[in-house]
Image 1: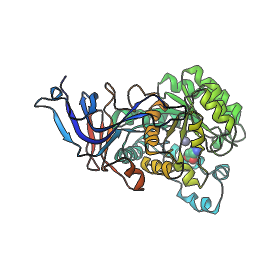
Image 2 (image 1 turned 180 degrees about the vertical axis):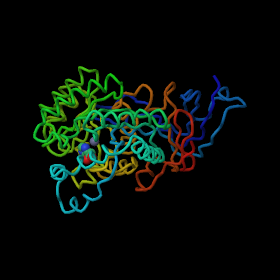
Image 3 (image 1 turned 30 degrees about the horizontal axis):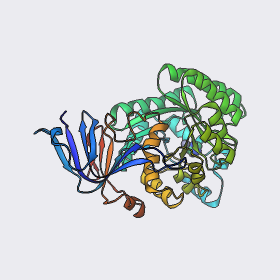
Length: 419
Ligand code: IZC
Ligand code: ZN
């Protein structure tokens, strides 16, 4: 077969293909090729290898790109974001700096509830335009797939409005979106003191969201003074009955047992885990729940990092994402997350690439399509303007991505969007 595009002279080609683990705690088990090539046809990987590319893949129509010894990885997957929302919360910054806790600001009617007020007032177009710009910037940082949650409507009309925006962005923007219903993100103002009443509403919303096919996952903010473990179990069980895949904001601030619940209920992933217990880590490992770690949130809240090395030692599958949201983590930059993971969590470059590619693909249940550069998968890839992988983690705080291809089409060229 003849390729549409061949990239050759790739100094370091992290294909992300999973190799057998050396032992249970090995998280560097992905393939890295030296002097590699990649051939692409119809948006998919046709051939990948080391050395000279096979000449039979090429004819006069094949586009050739000399990568000049630079580094390529699979497209980065940001598998936890609150992308679609309106307004911002910098007015809370002085409170945060003075030490007022995140959950206290929420209790006072700020935090998530402030974003809910703004999101309810916003039109679908306003939400769409704001999120579209963010996706553009995420693409420049090397991201090719984004998970996006609702959770700032907290009533049927406005949750659907957010999810419709997810759908339209997925249709119109080159990046792929994976949609999550997070109706149980907080108890809205009109239900304060009547959590049970709101949970009944969420369960009604689940059915409508499913009928309209607007979300694949159901998520919940299982947290002190938000939804407790019993309430979370109840909502997630109902979601499971409706056919949603499950994920949980678990043990972010207070150790409530969210990780244990994720294991018990068969969630795909548990997110945050800054306050996870040792027992919780064991449950994640035993039940193959992915730990989706969001270290820019720890950084921004000035809190501790999730015990990732402990999780890796216990054999837990670890992913990394931004948690982009208007409150705890207004960070669109996955490379900052990767830098923090290296400097603060002591993950190695290869572990971090694994956590943001194939493991993140598992968080969104797309590991058969994306997350590694293997024959038949989508040609989502990133070219970095560096000569070796370590450099990305050494020279921190700048964008090392030079070019991005989504399904074989170039969407970032020389650091600028080109679609
Ligand atoms: O808007 O504060 N943690 N949800 C759970 C968030 C952070 C988003 C927000
Ligand atoms: Zn979140």
